[in-house]
Length: 259
Image (cartoon, rainbow, N blue to C red):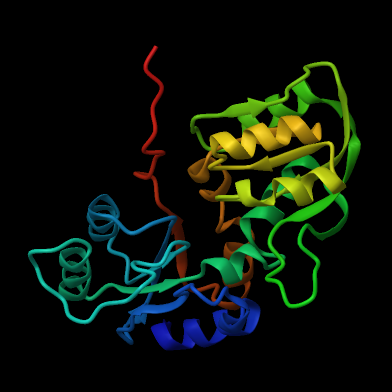
């Protein structure tokens, strides 16, 4: 059986912490060096995830989103997420997060979506020197926009899915992907692709996409990142076959559509 910091040491070799964005807080969140027999993958930390972790008797959570980005000067049970952190500590559940360092890794959620759509000749969407290389771009077998969208809907977790500049029968060959919040990369995606798959697109980002002739599939922040652990889980299972790895089942998108 492995201990928490042994798993952390391995994770740092496959997804280095030093490739995360300057503002991020990936890494050790709750560093309790427990013996680990059960690990839960969760997109975010929440009271629902704490409850699920307790019910499934997990020793460690690997999350995509850190508990906090800015850090704490102190902890108080009267505040959130302080109270949540204190509860995790009381339960002896260790937490480690891989956020933007996983986003730019070949093991990250953009790469997972790339596999779903059959992306080939893959390169970084952002390839300027000195810039964190968010997103991927490549080619797929020619397919209509409608068929590509339907494929994503069938594979990705449920979220509020939206499209910009959509033409059902138009053929697609070049695709760019940035999981999570990728609205700021519209201009770069327009230069390199026919369709851009991302989440959290704002109104003015959508307007820009229309002006640049780019089709955008906004599959939601949750929808594009919930599968963040797919590739990472395979690597961890190979290194730690004695550990049981689970994916959180209680998580869902906070957004709903009222008809």
